[in-house]
Length: 228
Image: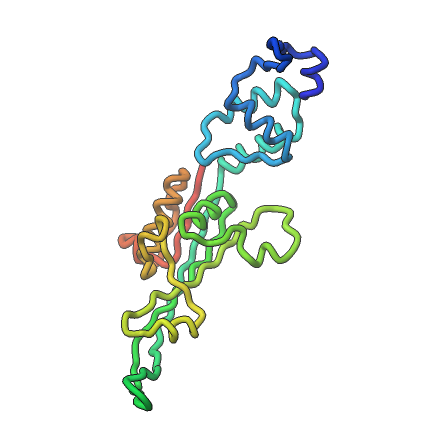
């Protein structure tokens, strides 16, 4: 496309220094140039000029870009999000050092949460991971060849009880789950559901099914969202 411009097939002009000026809207054209440079369409979150960008890509007949834009438009259409949350409480016994050769046996209760998500719109899972400070794609998806964005995500966390020493907590291999840039800890299932609702509803998903009690949405352990 750029070669066609410089050969004069598309309108262009030069200044006194010989620099070429391209008479197009600079904002979508910047994304086109970046795509030609990297073969990857990296649009900002909530980009609202898809129609203009598609029109520009059609003007220059950049077929791979047109195909990717069509795929993104399909991805932003119908979609399914399914989330299941499991929890398991256990009693921990550990030694606490009170002084030289002086240890006492202590106990505390710890709850481990596990959220399993499936979504036909990988962009939503990427957005959720970004808000939670989790890597995306998941490590399991990075281990092998990745031809398509992963559609599954599994999160496991367990808030540290105040009476459990940091060393004992680290030995368990657990992690805390934080949202909003590490400013709010998600200490239980309802807190995670609240965060998930905010992300899903912001991406035009609507609640389709809730279990076990639809009247108490934050305490539901099985949620299904649809986007029409």
